[in-house]
Each structure stands twice: as structure tokens, then as C-alpha cells.
Image (cartoon, rainbow, N blue to C red; front, side):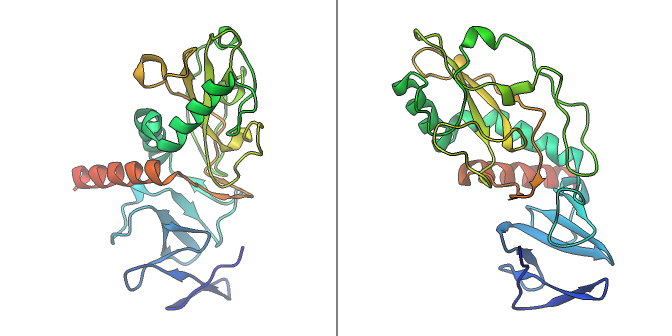
Length: 241
């Protein structure tokens, strides 16, 4: 991945780092994700955020990295941001047009030929309690529990028993009928036998395996969820003053 620029050049460790300009002067974005803003806070340190405002609020930032482009081994995730991200997905995923289309396709096919990913595990095999990993740290990893978390779920059960669908990162969409990689799965939603979200919102369960940055890119949300996340971050920023 090559980082490009038009407006300015930042020098780090003797190498010119070129950033793609954002809509406002002096603010840059990642070339492979124009919704993420890059702030060169000090030599050898870059802060990534969905909010373009300066001064940047580090408590709401995606994380920090010592070099650009960000890599899975160098990005240090912000645990507070990760918590907000999962909260937004848990509240709004069932409203996402892409997720709703996935649920409809799954119901109409009875779980077979699922285009959005998901293995054919019947619902009765899903009756476990998945817990959010207790913390996230350097390197961008989030540990799951021993049972595999929501990333091991997916697919409709037979005979109208319902099942689960995955909410996943768009940086590496799964091939037709395949399960997304565990590091790309935010979590799962539960469907009844008719393809409706259980309890109206799907009882979202985070996977515990999601990583913000992988070799395939960094945090690719659907347009709907990205907008909900930005709105939430703006609200949090206002409350923090």
C-alpha cells in the first residue's frame, strides 16, 4: 500500500511520507480508507481517527502507530474506541440495509448458498454465552474465549429453526457461501426460522476475534454503520467537552 499526497509531506525516520489530503487544509486521510484521518502528533507517532477536528481527541481515536501505513503489528488499538465500535454495531447492525439483505437471502435459501458468509450450524448448537474479551492491546488483537465466540456461528438451521449471520469488515469480503475470516468478524446476529431478527434486534454478540487492522486493511464499515459510528463519536466528543 502506497501513501499518496497532494498538499503536504511529513518526514519520519528520514523517509518522506506522503498523505492524501482531506477536505480541509492540513488534514490528511488514509489513501485506502478516506474516512480515516491521520494526525502526525509527534515524531514517530501517528494518531488515526474518524473525526477530523483539531485538536484531536485521543480518547476517541482508533489508535496510534509509529509508522505509516499502519500495520497489524504496529497499530496500538484504543480500547475505548473499540468498545464504542462494538456498542454502535450492537445497537444498529440489525438496521443496516446490507445486513438485512443478508438475513433475507439467508431465510429464502434456508441457509444454503449464503452469499455473505456463514457456516451451516443449526441454532440449537449456538446456545452458549459469548463474552467480550476483557481488553485490547498493542498489535490490534482481541482474544476470544476458548469456545470461539460469535465468529464460529453463522447459517440457518434446518427445518426453520433459525440461526445466525455475521456482521463483518468490508476490507476482505468472503467468497460466495464462505465464512469471513475470524479477524474480520465484528459479531453475529440471531435469526428466527423465518429470517427475522430475534427480539427485533438480533441479540448481537461480539466475536472477540475482530482486529481493527490486518494485512487486508483497516476498519472497513458499511456506509450505514460508519455514519452511525461517526455520529456516536461526535456525541461522545461533545460530552467530553
